[in-house]
Image (cartoon, rainbow, N blue to C red; front, top):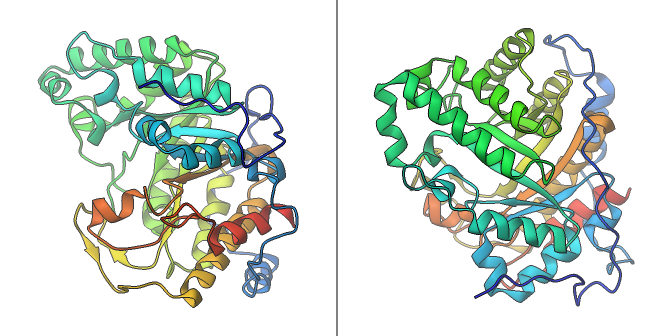
Length: 389
């Protein structure tokens, strides 16, 4: 079945095109240090705690029309293909799209000497038809590595040769069409600031990151190249490890140009911690992408099936509080990250119907801006209000 392309959503009589051209690659020449949160930031966090998440009057305008930076929704081709309501919302509201799984290594190169472009081409066609930026996720990720590539790890030279060929071929194919890439995803341990001992690390050492960025930049010098990770908005030890890694890469002249905060948040993560981590990230001078945003009520231990079910049902009060959390997150991004570094905010599974949270962690939760009937929640209105103030 062909992918459904909507050049104009039935929910949106008008549409503004996405911002033309590449993202601003200017870097602030700032030194990495450990600042204390300033009083104005603390006042800001307190001031927005009572935000009301009521809908505005001009509801027909999509998020993409009111946002001062790109707003994206991650999706699989098959979901966009089979659910016209989801597709309509995505086309109306988002100026950027990320493939959740269709552009990972196991989908692109499932067998030796094989490249499968079908789904990536479909994502590009959808993005073009809807005036959206296509973001590539992810080139090198330990969990996205197909088994046959793992067999190369016994020979570091062979593994390095494959990585160069893979990145050069893949990024080169979409040169000038994919705006940015998660070049390396989740290279640090879940907790703390140490490198994760993946097959890439064990075979090539930490230099595999520098190699990956160098290969990607050679294949598309204009693409924005990100390091992307989770928990760096709440685990400050892990954040500091990532910042040391970035500082090391920058000192070597490695062409890293972006830092992705996945932002798989919990309701109980303090806003002050999130603000501190965003501030430290912005001090790198890199483009800052909130790349996989959702906010859960329950908890998990970051492992598959590791959910802790605290709430079996969601109440209107809980949803209102979630709306305020989305509001404060978007407000922090606007206030803390300099506009020239705002690569955008992307929702990961932007509806409760298709959220990855419940299946992966074996939870019942409500983490996104749309409910299971694909209707806007207070989370949607809270986020939207932060864009329009």
